[in-house]
Length: 384
Ligand SMILES: Cc1ncc(COP(=O)(O)O)c(C=O)c1O
Image 1 (tube, rainbow, N blue to C red):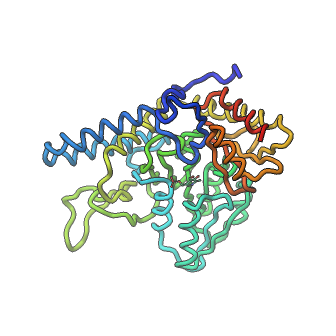
Image 2: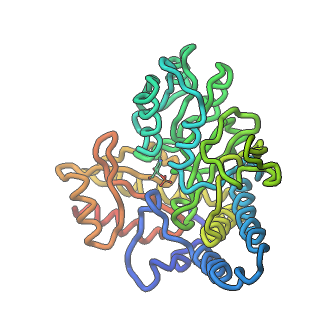
């Protein structure tokens, strides 16, 4: 235990939702409770932008733009990209939809994904099947470069998959997959809902073409804002167009449109809520400042919890061992996972259950979770 030395300053005390409670929150993979610095940044921006900012005339829009620029810059910094490679979105699913809708699909085209995707990743692909006759090929975990290589044909146009599988926390070997897809002329689209804030993400080193994530899970940001990375030069058209997609609004004319941003901002259509942008910027900015040690701390805490479960005879852990990230999924022999989740909730432990590889209880172990509460959770699981 002594090996888990806190590197990060997101302690339980910094999570307003948990103050004054004895609840253990282990569901950040579904929705992370905002940290105090996020709530503060959002409230301050809301104060300003619901009041005095309106007295600044047209400057209001520049002020809104500055907050959005801070959000883009923080998101870019966090994933090792340049700000112009990042568009603000609503969430992960929004980015996935923008990416998938941005290509001209034809009947017979193929996309490769996995059987462990969230609906936000898979439904846009099935829509391609329904609308255009695109074939959706799904790989079974564990996801390996070999399985992807074998599935690619001359018809494959995109590999669209999660970086971290939401079911088990398996971390997909993305760099190898992106490299082999690139070699074959296939685009890569990554669902980063469970990766950003949970494991290190450096998009350029990973070689992904398109990478979608959200602020409201592992980043402990507000609900309603995420980001979408678009590698420079990737030819995906924007279906979310508006005045903010124009690099220079003065180029707009009623006959021919206008000049779109060549970078990711072509995917940003219009006005965003400054309070959200400020909260998101604070969430991403703090994650940047915590540095790489935060991911090892998360992983070590998850590993500690998984080891505690290993000691229990009736519990099976379905996540990779040693733990690869903060997600730990398990089943209780003789007890359904929905019922196990319900009973744990009644004892003050908030978790969720996930559908694969079978219905599992899933714990999302984050920085603000203490070793003591993980031990208490393991004890509660042992009594189920
Ligand atoms: C892998 C994965 N993709 C997408 C989503 C949906 O995320 P969002 O709410 O950011 O669209 C989730 C949420 O749980 C997820 O786990």
